[in-house]
Each structure stands twice: as structure tokens, then as C-alpha cells.
Image (cartoon, rainbow, N blue to C red):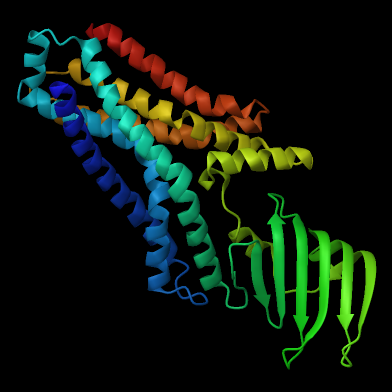
Length: 354
């Protein structure tokens, strides 16, 4: 128990440092990228900083496997430098016991990462996206979290849902005149951008005359005159990778019910499912890696190779899934292939040091 506590504290300390450095680097890249849009609309330096800060939880969540790998390597290297690992082995602390002890700390990391990914980052990413979109578009504003509320000159628009292909559902358009009097109310069950213009379908329109009376009519479809472009709609969409597992599951079922493409959302779903295992594999990989290089002066080399392994895993997770989707393979394999590949690498390395 004492050894478990000591190892856990050392690993968590170095993992915190590793994640801090990685987070600072990736956040700086995001900051530089956002500077290109500064000056458009109301998107000033304050909005840029706010966007970067709100993006931190999602970035941290994505970097956790790499941070766990580097943190474990640094921690075990520090113990090796002081000959503490040699003492543990001489005292009968086998490699399997050491692995079990380290994985207990990994379980703490998994719980923390899942909490961020499920309860923190979906909310902060929504706030980051909406704040940026609102600042960039002076004539368009999102007002509440209940659907998408926008202002287009004298018209207010509420959109219940925007599907991945930018199909709109439950569209409500409130049109006012210059004296802020409600002139008409339109409800459309759906909408699509066709031939350079928005077309609403299954419309219920109520026109309010100046004498206070109203006329109602139904239309199968009609053109929607608006300044809201598909590009503006796009910036309000949250990427599948930034949604929680439960949001993804619910949305996948919804898309299937409406005969929509689900591959990208299934990939994001399975990637989140295997992320806890990825953290465990990265931590397990660090143990034989360090034990296979216990000689003095190898700490820097271990860290460099660890960074390369972490970046390779990060890049594989980001790219391989879309390659799998492009070839029509089940998205679950896009999430599992990097995990299985690095798990096999860990097993091979364990056999070399036992």
C-alpha cells in the first residue's frame, strides 16, 4: 500500500507536468490559429482568449493518453536515476506487481479523463463555438441553449436541430416591422439549402395584419429569404468528437431513425469508449520501455522516444478512423486498430524485459 501510494503520487505529479506542457503548446497553436480571424465582427483579443480557455478541457481530454505515457516515463525514469527501481526489484517487487501498482494510478487518470470528456468538455466546447460564432457574425446571435436562436436584421429565427448535412428541423421565423410589431410567424418542419437558396418545407404561416387580425395558411414548400448562409449554420455545429458518449448514442439513434449517415458519429462514439483503455495501454507501455533502458543517461532518449510514440498514437487516432470510413469499414475498427497495435507493442516489450 505504501509503495502503491508512493508510485501513484510520483506518476500523477509527472503526468500533471507533462499534460501542462502539452496543453500549453496545443493551446498556443490554437491561439495563433484564431488570431487570423481577429478583427472580424466583434471577434477581438478578449474573445480569442475566451475561446482558447473554453477549449482547454477538450484539448486536455484528447491529450490524456499521451500525457499519461510521458508522465509515467518521466516518473519511472526519476525513480531509476535514484536507483529506487533497482531496490524495488531486489526486494522482490516483480514487474507484474509494479505494473499492477502503476495501473491503479492509471485508473485514477481514467476516472478524471472520463469526467472531463463526459461532463465538462461538451459544455465548454458548446460555449466556445457559440461565443466565437456570435462574435464573428454581427447580424447573427445565439440567444439561449434551447435550440439555435439567431437574429437576421428584423427577423428572429429559432432552429430546433441542424443535421450533419445542414438539413434544418423545426424552423420558426418571427418577422417584425420597424416599429417592433410582430408581422408574421412561420413554422416549417424542415429546410434545406438547394441551388443557392434555403427552401422550407411543410410550412404553417400566420400573417398578422395591422388591424390585429390574422390569416393562416399552409404551404408544401417556400423559399426563405435570409442572410443566414450555410457557412454561418456550420459554425454553430459541434463536432462529433466534442460530444459526450450519451449525446452521441442518442444522436446516432436519431440519425438512423431519419435514414441519415452515422459513420462519423459512430467513429467518435467508439473512440470515446476505447479512450480509457488507451490510457491504460499507454501507461502499461511505459513500464517495459523504461525497464528495458535502465542504464544511466538514457532518460533523455526515453523521453524523446516516448514523445514520438505518443504523437504517433495521437495522429493514428485522428486519421486512421477517417481512412476506415472512406473504405466503408465499420467505424469501430477505426477506434480499435491503434489501440490493438500499441497493446501488441506493449506485450512484445514486456516479453523482452521479463
